Image 1 (cartoon, rainbow, N blue to C red):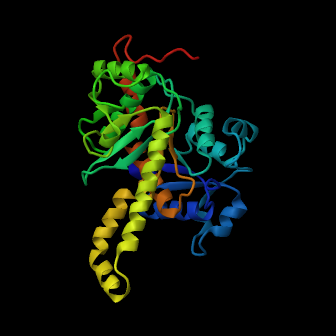
Image 2: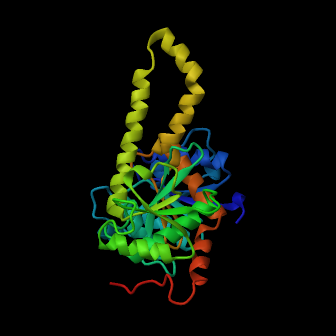
Image 3: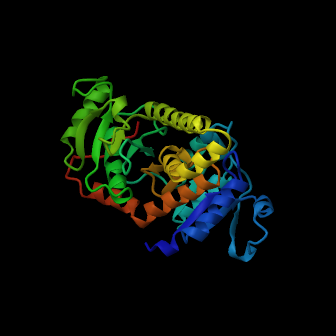
Length: 347
């Protein structure tokens, strides 16, 4: 698909700073990335925060009657409110009116809406949320999945995560042969619980991926791995801890810079370096996490997302569309030999 025709549905009512910051990020992406954005939500609230210079005839607003509150149970909320903004946005993708969807609202509701509206890709038992982390190698990132979609995972799920993560890393992150790791408490094959040991065996035997072994906690950001798989419980703890560490580092840098005139001069000199540091460790620079395994491009943003995060989330969605991530995952499973990577029966 050509980059000029990518259309992204934005849940304008989702997030702590909705709709203002969500719309600001979407409008920036529209200008700088050349994407079409569909703003889904309450038309009056959306129009109220649009910049005066914006021509309303050039902004596509898709009405939605409701929104899923952060304190609502996700599945019941999605089912009770079929006209909620996240449901309407997902329907746009399902109907082919949008190529992807972005939401910084209730992450559980976004995942539930994606499963109910879009469904799973053939061959995938469980979708996984993949998040990109910086590493000690300046030009390298690591994709961690799952970071919250599945609290408990069977070994087969982890194997599927590895396949999807490998495809994403190769075609979106530009890694020729992604090195896959399994998050564990030791490097040895026998380490971990029974599920970890069995997952290690499945990953080692899978010829479709470059599995190089277990990854301990200290290895996650080393740059040794391109993709690391784990269950959603551990992955979510890891994600939020990493975000907190990044915020602490940025705060320490701000506090330790000299004050007064000396500080102003020093900051001016270091400005390019400080900008690169922020780009590497600030989670806002990564935009959000891709929900891999559903039949549509879906990016789940942080609840506190502001305009820069939304812009980067849209950039992420555009890259996934341009690089045909869904089609490549489908092709990978269609080409599997009989008996390998087949979905387990529903439980």
